[in-house]
Amino acid sequence: GENVEQHPSTLSVQEGDSAVIKCTYSDSASNYFPWYKQELGKRPQLIIDIRSNVGEKKDQRIAVTLNKTAKHFSLHITETQPEDSAVYFCAANLGTYKYIFGTGTRLKVLA
Amino acid sequence: IAGITQAPTSQILAAGRRMTLRCTQDMRHNAMYWYRQDLGLGLRLIHYSNTAGTTGKGEVPDGYSVSRANTDDFPLTLASAVPSQTSVYFCASSPDAGIGTEAFFGQGTRLTVV
Image (tube, rainbow over all chains, first blue to last red; front, side, top):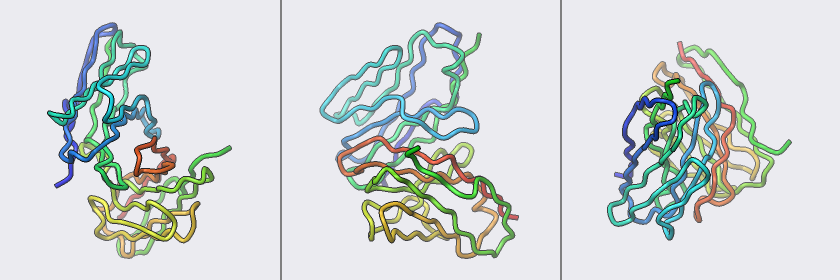
């Protein structure tokens, strides 16, 4: 069925190192891939997104890459800081009027 | 301030009771969604609506119903609550899910069914 798989479920990195989170999707009709950050006790908020006609997008320390052939996309955070600690969700709109989210990655940046 | 609002913020509910979670947005977004968030399972789509008057089932629709009488409101009803429906519920909206746009989330409703 339609699904989005996300790995790893938890990730610990030293401050200043890079973090990479990967997602795969099942529906080849998906055309929009957002990433959300959720801090403890708060609502998810969009941090970056990419459309199917673009292979890579960057915004300061965060970047997203998309491989449509392999149906996977990744979030890259460079020079991680303690405030990057949160749960990150990938999502895909599976060619229909609904978003399906991955199961989340809990990122811990160790000072 | 424009945005999306949920009510209540938290609720303890006896099993078997009926409960409606309210969601209102003032951004004139066409698409609205209900998700439940459980530890280790991420955000799972319960129901969605791509425009007023239409609704659709998501990944986990059983035990829940929705209606979309107008653009602004998208209530979620639990007809007879069960403990497995204990979760944090998020309502979200987006301008038009068909072309892929950012989804804005409400602050969440923490529901405990006992």
